[in-house]
Amino acid sequence: MAAPFDHNDDTVIVVIGTGAGGGVLSNELAQRGISVVALEAGGRYLPEDYINDEWESFGQLAWLDPRTTSGDWRVARDFSGLPAWIVKAVGGTTTHWAGASIRFQDHEWKARTNYGPVQGANLLDWPIDGAEMAPWYDLAEKKLGVTRTNNLAGLPGNNNYKVFEAGAKALGYKEVHTGRMAINSEEYDGRMACQQTGFCFQGCKWGAKWSAAYTDIPRGEATGNLEVRSKAHVARILHDDSGKVTGVEYFDEAGNLQMQKARAVCVAGNSFESPRLLLNSASSMFPDGLANSSGQVGRNYMRHMTGSVYGVFDKPVKMWRGTTMAGIIQDEARHDPSRGFVGGYELETLSLGLPFMAAFLDPGSWGREFTTALDAYENMAGMWIVGEDMPQETNRVTLNHDVKDQWGLPVANVHFSDHPNDIAMRNHAYSRGTAVYEAVGATRTFPTPPYPSTHNLGTNRMSENPRDGVVNKWGQTHDIPNLFVSDGSQFTTGAAENPTLTIVALAIRQADHIAGEMSRGNL
Image (tube, rainbow, N blue to C red; front, side, top):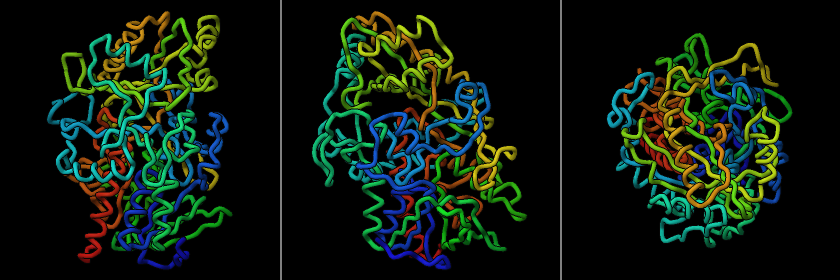
């Protein structure tokens, strides 16, 4: 482990957050000989600490600091303090994720061009494309050990997958398999193969699923160039009279306010906390928050178009056994406006434990219809829908000055309302998911509402023109050259794919850029 860096050392790069963006970036910089201080608001947990119980795991890993929610989504009514499940721990949401690792399709990098103007949507082309990202995706897939790439076999299918596959093939779907997953199908990179024990969301107790918590972070520390300070809650980013970022203030575990000087600052706190931090760092020079001359900080929040479909069968499925999300239908991920919407969606296997199923099936419901669904849990198969939702300026993260966190800082308010395209896509996905199960004899099917997702995107989006977004093609803020965004909040659009692989690829690419700029004397 690196010796602690001095708080007055202004040669270090400060990275805020240690998930798919910040954790990977910290390691990649450290491997290049660059001194890094990574500040993580949560504690450090390793596989031996993870809890194979959904409620207890939630209490251990989740960001439970207060938030508020508004908009017409049901989350604002049913889970107003939980707009999404975000992990507060070293490794970030790479601890609590399913492992699905899918590249964007070429057309999704240029959504504005390919979809045309969509009324009410704030579509924009990314300033990068699939060809530019291909070598970085290659590196990310090797880092994560993604199945079905680099001669790594796919994971076996559990009963949930077998039902899913049979229904898909009965409908004529062709692109059906157990997915590209960052879960070892065989021993890889010093990590054992998946043991099929389930509870993949709760942290993999075997270490078979890639997580920055036990891969990138310790490897970065081993170089002597990375110091991780856990339970360090960043309050604001500091700057000098020229507008250059000079460091950060944060509260340590004891509640004391500390200051760390920095050569550059990289913000990787997820799509809620990253814009919140930029907004909470407002000053006389930057009255609207840092990097916000465009007014786009916090705007264009995306969460993917989501929902679930469950089917009940005559015989037990026991969907909770085996890998949670090793199963995907990709045929509907194409762009085909004849379906009544732009963009596309994936269908992926999913199972929730009985307590979470009861919580998220249809909150507020009771009576025979609800209880009989739970009674049929053993005979149930489940799938999750994930599709491209439309960025909207009005879907945004703002500061709620009426609610403060334990440090006295205004909390994030998350406002979200579905775009008509989202609703049309979801209804199509519900009908296709239902058809998959009915094709193999489901006695009952039911869709569930799109409850808290961990796919939080946008809010500090990437743009070619500074007036349209917050960061450039390198995740470097348009306004402040030594301030970067290094997480999913830089996404210009969401695409139909689970975002982690793309976040990792962008982080590797950004590390290479930062190292180059430092060597050239530009940073």
